[in-house]
Image 1 (cartoon, rainbow, N blue to C red):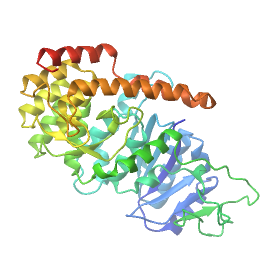
Image 2: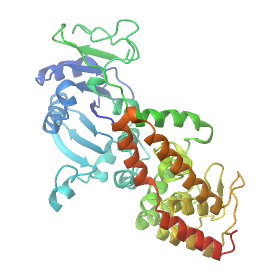
Image 3: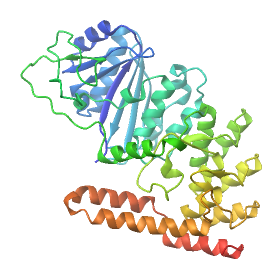
Image 4: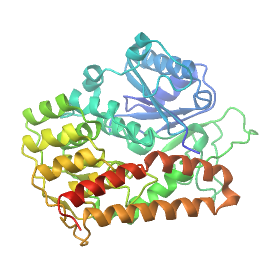
Length: 414
């Protein structure tokens, strides 16, 4: 299963005042963090039930009572990302990544829930632009966790706190962890920066893993590939990569006109880059050039535009190969043709010595092996069904790969 989390973030350094205000809002049990980077995080039991009306109400009451800005994040099954922004009690902005998730909504409601980058940017770190926020809000991500984390980084909120939830509790019970007695006793274990409020000392607190199994695998693989993940890109470069992934041509033009380097690397999820490395997840933090990002998503128009704007088609990533490798693995014959027309040799090799034709054969074999491994775990039937569904959604069609092979061979690949 995916992750579930609700957290509220108060722009304040006065934890005592936040504690008093949460208690005055008729809240249930709650935890209040120490301040960090000008923000204090609140996790509350009723909000943890994913009652969206209550989340909005509580966020607004905290903002009104303290006279400050408050942002609430909600993550539902790693599929939906939501936020509410209040300032001095007034709702200024709200966002829903998949408004039709549970039932169809009107076009007016969908527009209302799109989020307003021009408003949110006023509360972000210096240097963040509306274009960067828009790219994150419109990005096609496998896990909605990534959307919330990126927005939190823009705002200066600790990314780990943005995915906190009241039910996560204490991950370390070795020292008798659990809730304090309501007298301000510090949170134990890994959460020494949290205070606890518990009006019922006899209550039992259920503890859930902070991430679902898919996200735990994702984290392990992030650590494994840390040597090639160098998160040093500027916000502008990150925005250009996100625009390339989404195929937003006007956004690409605007960012380059504002000074973004079409050859500078930016961070993006690995599922959008190289399914040959990891077809079942998205590892945030890997940096790739915008052209490679667009090619990996089969964004042919974006590929042509980036080359026109000065992107170097022949650049080779140390892990993912060239843009031609990425397009071939994605099963986009149109993008493969565009790159060959731009002068890329059909037999261009990755740093591992692999041609695009060989890359297609490798991804085919890896996808089949992964599916067979998943099917061989009957003790994890539910997980098996979910993983198989995600693999099917991430895997290009056999027809797409065959079309790419035909284009490559017609261009001289062997």
